[in-house]
Image (cartoon, rainbow, N blue to C red):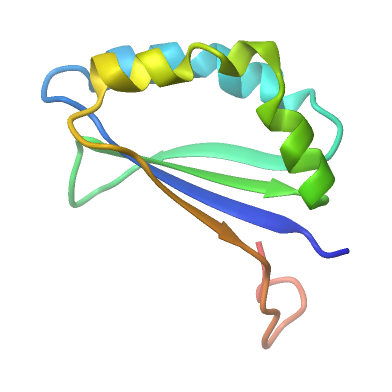
Length: 106
């Protein structure tokens, strides 16, 4: 089974980006310790500083589904209601490797 890549985009309310980052920090740190987590990296959009983008890479769909069951994810729904200005967008992807083996996939 191939890796699973998730791209989650969050539009944060004006003036609350640092609060959102601080709230995500413990979730990210705990996720890094999960079996099957290859990467789980938060980014800030250069063109839209209120947008945070989380890029995840998992060894399998099973590992990703296990991630969704972790207790430290329970509060994210409330966090989204409190801090986001619009619903998050999620893309679940499988790699399409092209070109150089090392550069053609995440």
